Image 1 (tube, rainbow, N blue to C red):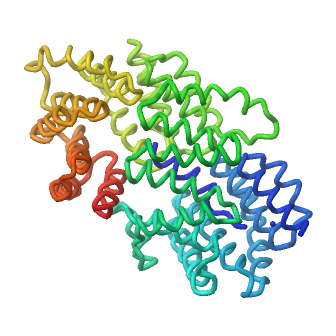
Image 2: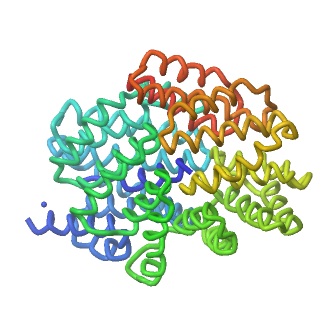
Image 3: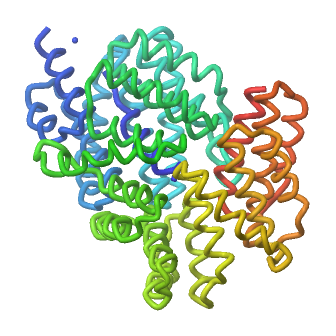
Length: 489
């Protein structure tokens, strides 16, 4: 899940720069922030050629990343050459020149990466980075320069092993703390799309530093300045869910009808995916299926479609309808996958569950997981306690997951001793590959607990121990977290 927030965050973050022309540009940017993309497009004719081209490409990119509709990718390509040529006509004394080029090439790299064209992604990310380095030399204190440098420092500070080619291409690994300082400076002092910095800060704290509570504060601060928008509400809902506040997330997600019926707003199909997960966590499987099905029908790409179909199957399975569940597992097995951690896990698990109806113990473990993720800890512990009453009947794989789920609930409740005890029991189990990911994650979470308790050296040992494991589900996400944690120490 984490990856989709990153995509939308980068969607909002690779953007540039108040005479009448400057005032109009500010209006365009305000429209983009609120995802009033049609209104933004209608104002472009009043801008200079370089601004017109720059924003035209940006709007097409936002639409594509939010919907995965190839028509918007085509729209971006149709406007690409003109945008680049117009921006390149700017004199080098204009700080927009290299900032615009850096952001355009950065977005193009992101899209090519998502489409699986790593050769083009490599070329464009190199162009982007070269241009922002030029601005660093020419305009080191410029707000847009600080914002882009901060973004690169944050995103590249914890690149997983499978994407090391990005840092190898640039010859630069990033520095999280430096990036955060640069982004905070841009958020406070920036004159051009200042709000973007707060969104990247949100991402860094939530997804890289595993600190959803602090991450939410950047969004609340931004909303206090700019007002509510579909984008801010979307990220706030995800932040609340990441902080085990599912009911609070649902309050925001209930704005769906407001945004969906507002012709001015470009609706984000991923809203239905997150809303489906929210109902899934509280075991309202009927409502969850409605929103997952909406997402599958509306999203034109492959990102999280695998996971949505898997959760449709799980909603049926946990409602004791294996026959229907099996049809969704079959869809997952035959569908194109995005390569994201969540989709890969969904594929591997669907393959197992299609082959055979999972046991009641496995279903109970899924219930405990979902209830914990939603913050329904008493219910989650109740499910686990029922399993533990007959622990001798559980397989090693099931005991591995049971201890891990106990650890997650106790950690969420800040019961550090009980959390560590259960994580250690999880690590000690001899388990097959299907639940192997719970052991490196247990190492990481022990490190998190030790760090909170002030035992930094001991925490480092467990972060490094987590990095020893290979070939498990959610590996990229964990490597990112571990590298970020080690860097912060």
